[in-house]
Image: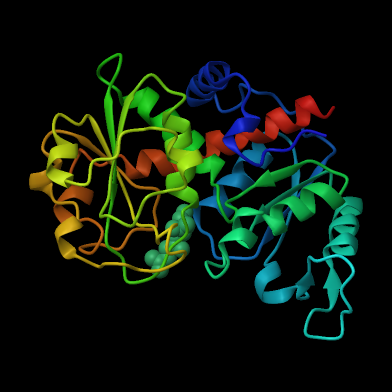
Length: 313
Ligand code: SN0
C-alpha cells in the first residue's frame, strides 16, 4: 500500500515537478484516474486552503469527495492498544479507520500536533493509525510533524519563480501570539534539501528544528546576516522543538519587513497574522508569492492524489 504521508513518499521529485508544470498549463493533464472512486477527507483541525484545494484537485481527477469535520463532530478516538475504554474516548482507531476504509477508496487526514508530548506527536499516532488500519491509501493534509502538500506547492512555486539556477532560500522564524507546530518548517526544510537551492535557516536560539530534519543545513542566528543576498525568504512561526511546544520569545524584531526583504521574493504558507509575522507592505507588494503558493496547493494535491491512484491501481 502506498501512502502520501511525507515528502519521502515522493520518489522522483523532478518528475513530479515536471508534471506540476504541465498541470499549470492544462489542469486536465493528469486525466481522470479517480473516476468511479471516492475520497474521504477527515479534518481534526481547521482549514481553508487544504479543504478547498484538495476537493478541487479530487474533482479534476474524477474523484467523488466526502468531507467530515471529525474534530468537532466525530467520536473521541482511542489510539493505544489494550486500553480499557471506560473514559471519554468512545471509539478505537482500529474500528474507525477500517469503517472509513469501507466507504472510501482514499482517505485524507488533517491532525495537528498537540504540542504537549513530543514523543506522541513525532510518533504520528493519528495519521499512521489511519494508514495502518484503514486498508486504503492515506493522504497527509498536515499531520503532527509534516505538511508535504504545502512543501510540494512551495517547491512548485520556487521552480516557477526562480531567476537563477541555484537560488538562495532563507527560512526565517517569526513571532506569533500562539504556539504553532513544526510541521510546515519541517517539510519545507526537507523539501528544499532535495532542491537545487542554497538553504539557510534563521531563528532565535532555542528554536532549532529536529536534527534529523535540518540534517546539517546551515543555521544562522543573526537574521540580518542570514538574509543577505536572499532570492526567496520563507517566513513562518513555530514553537520550540527542544523545549517542546513552548513559546520562548515574541520579539517583534523578528517580524519580516519590506526593508529586511530587500529584493527577495516573499513566501508564507498562510494563514498569516499581518503586522505580527510580516508587515502589510510586504504582503501587498508584487514580491509576495503567497497567493501563487496557495494556487499551487490544488496542483500539489492533484499530483499526490494521482500518484496514489496510479501506484495503488
Ligand atoms: C497552522 C500551522 O501549522 O502553523 C497551519 C498552517 C498551514 N497554522 C495555524 O494554526 C495558525 C493559527 C493562528 O492562530 O494564526
